[in-house]
Length: 100
Image (tube, rainbow, N blue to C red):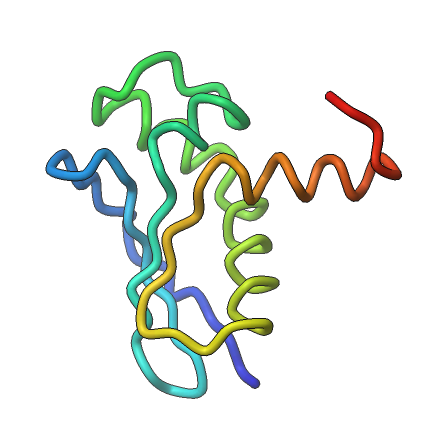
C-alpha cells in the first residue's frame, strides 16, 4: 500500500471545525481531516479559529500524517477523520498503557 501526502496547503473547514489535508492511497485521493478538538488537546491550538488550527496543524503536520498513515493501513476508506481519541490512544500505547 502506497500512502502519500502531497505538499498542498491544509484547508480550514469551519462548517465542521476540522483541518483537511491531501492524501493519496495507491493513487486514489482520500479525504483526510483532523478535528479542532484533537488540535487543541494534543497539538497546542489555543482556540478553534482558523489561524490557531492551521498553525497547530502546520507545526505538527508530520505527527498528524503519521497517525493518518497508520490508520489508513488498517482501514480501507474514502475519508478519514482523526479525532482526539486517536492521538490519546496512541500516547497511551507508547507509554506502555500509562494514563495521561
